[in-house]
Image 1 (spheres, rainbow, N blue to C red):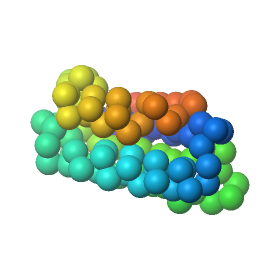
Image 2: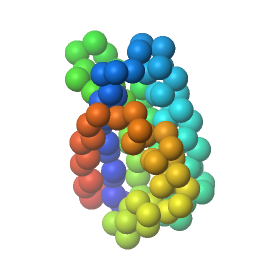
Image 3: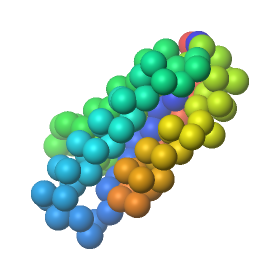
Image 4: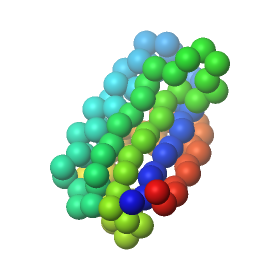
Length: 100
């Protein structure tokens, strides 16, 4: 199994209300991919970090193998969420992929 974990920081230019809406959209969009992409075992977005956090939200997902992760990266449903709900609003992205 392969884990795919991403931390995002939202753009500073977003208001507090916009950040809430963006987080909700990202969570709904990414978690909506469950059952839609071959090899995707689980997907969860955490939008409520503690005050000590230095990221705004986190993706925690699992895939059957590295090939499934690569397929997810280019899958049209994922690309639509990434291009429509994530990339326009994020300032930074940190990713860690690893085998379990």
